[in-house]
Image: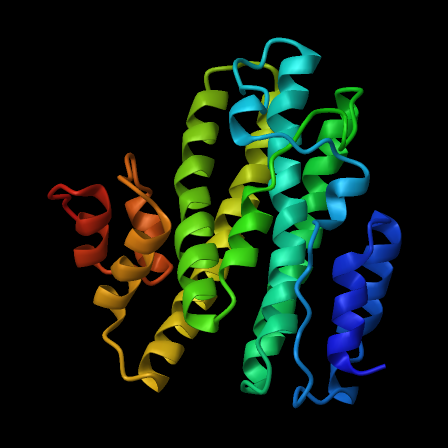
Length: 268
């Protein structure tokens, strides 16, 4: 079985411990593989979490309000753990879908997948402390759907790391600030985990920025104009609020992009 066949099996696997073991076996033996392939990648028709999560439209996902009860804690943690699980498959799909790129590309996105597995396990352990488990609440499939719509490297790097994951940098900071209002020791555990994730997710967005610009350079396209053209094609009436400017700049966003995203003048 070649590299791409192995990654395909990991993406489709819906047994989480088995998925992790399969990934670990691959990750520990990368030097054995070639990343050259003439085969065409398949389109995944359903996300691997479909077998254990009820998928609903985003508007029907339970709102994250408060942190006073185990259920409220679980609703927040379930939303985060679902993002981390989705991110595992997305980082693996970035390896699987786009072929014959520099070896560094695959090493970097597998490194991201390794981080996402660790983030998933960290948040999942906290979720289980509330008495709930992953799959106990409905989820949406927005990230999976976005991946299905981005079938070339330029759009994938623009939409997944540089839009959705970058938005996660903003959201993470907001959640930390809200949780700091609670004196519950469990809130401190969650904050500590989110701080680790925030720090490491900056590098994920950074990798997306790097390979987006790599593809812009390869296609002789100007990065900022190209990015916003893609965003305009994917989203209607978008506007970003409360940006984590420091994290975004570390991840590769320019001050010009941050101002265009917020649609107002921001000091950065």
